[in-house]
Amino acid sequence: MVRYAIDDVTDDMVLGESLFSPNKDLLLAAGYHVNETYRKRLKELGFSTVLINVEGAESVIPETLISEHVQREAAVALNKSVVELQNIFTYKKITRKALNETLKANRNYLDKIIVNSGIQHALEKLINEILEQSSIVLNLSVLDKVDKSLFAHTVNVTIASLCIGRKYRYNYDELKQLGMGVLNYDLGLAVVPKEVLERPDPLSDDDAKQLSQHTVYGHIMLSQNLAIPPTSSAVALQHHEYQDGSGYPRGIKGENRPPLKDISKKHIIHRFAEIVAVADVYNMLTEGRLHYSAKIPVPQAIKTIIRMGGTKLNSEIIKTLLAMVPIFPVGARVRLADSPVPELEGYTGVVAKDNPEDLEKPQIILYESRHHQKVKPILVDLAKHKGFTLELIS
Image (cartoon, rainbow, N blue to C red; front, top):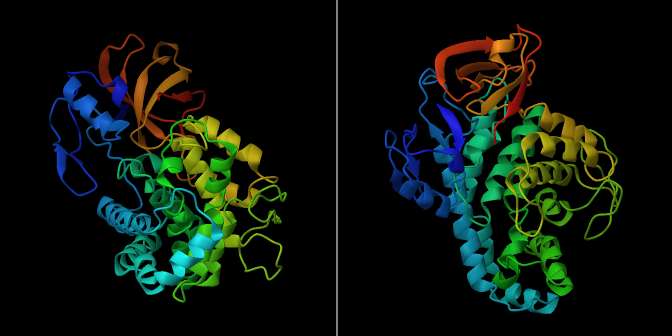
C-alpha cells in the first residue's frame, strides 16, 4: 500500500485500509474506489492522507509502535476530560482570581476528571507497547490518522515523548511520570476561551497573552491535584521555556544535557519538560497548529528543529528524536531524484522497509515511470546500492 495525499487521489484508486471515526464508526471500507464524493467527505473529517492499493506494493504495510485501538483509547479518554473541563471553564475572559474560585468550587470533581481511569489505563497501555519493542522507529505519519480534534496532537506528542524516554532507558515509574505530564501538558488550553482557541484570524495582543497563559493555568490545576507528581505538573508549566531563557512563562534556562537525572536547580528547565518541548515542536511543524505554525514538509521540519537546538530546544534530545524518525517512512511515496541507472531517474516508488541502521537508506519499490506509467515493480535497497537520491512526494 502507498500513502497518498487526498488531493492526489483519483477516482480509479482503491482504498487499502478501512477508515474509522474516533468513535470507531466505519467511514469507508477497504476495497472501495475513493471517488470525489468520498474524498470531499474525508477532507471535511480531517483526513489529509489515505493508503491506496498499488500493484506490486501490496505487502507494504505502514506500522506504528502503538496499535491504533490504544491510540484511539487515549484520544477518546483525553477528549472526554477536555470537554468536561471546558464545560466548567466557560469564561469569555479568564483571570487568575476567577480560575482559583472555579478550582476551589469544583476541586473534587476536577481531580476526578484530570486523573480518570480511562487516561490511566491508556497511559499504561502506551508505555507497555513501547517497552515491548526491540527497536524504535517512529513513523509519525501513521499516528496522524487517529483523531483530528483540538487536542489530538497531545496523543502524538505523548507517544514521541515516551519513545524518547525509552531511548534514555527510563524505568517504568519515570515513564509514567513523563507520560502523565505530557498527556496533561496542554490541559491549560481548556481554560482559554473557545473564541480565542478556535479563531482562524491572527490573535490580538490581549488574546495572544491569554493563550500563552495556558502553561500557568495547566500547572495550577495539576499542582493542586495530589495524584499528579510535581515532576509531571512541571511539564505543563515549562514546555514553552527555552534553553537560552527566552521562553515563557518564567524565562528559565536549560543546560543542553541528556535528560538523565532530575536537576535540583530551581532555575533550570525540568528534563521532562525539555523532552516534551522537542516532541511538541516537531509535531507542530510536521502537522501544523493554529496560531503557532503552518504544516511544513518533514525535511524542512528537521532542518528547522535542528536550527532551534542549543538556543531554543535541548540539542541532545533533538538528536535522540531524529534518530528515531525516518525522513522516508514506510508507505511514503518517493521519487528518484538521482539514480546511477539513468533510465530509473524520475521513477515513483514507495518506501517498503526501514533500515534501522540508517533511516535515510530504506528499501523502496518502484512502480511508476517518470511519465506516470505503471511498470513492473522494482525493488531497490539503498543500503546496498549507492548513488540514489530520494525526495518525498507530499
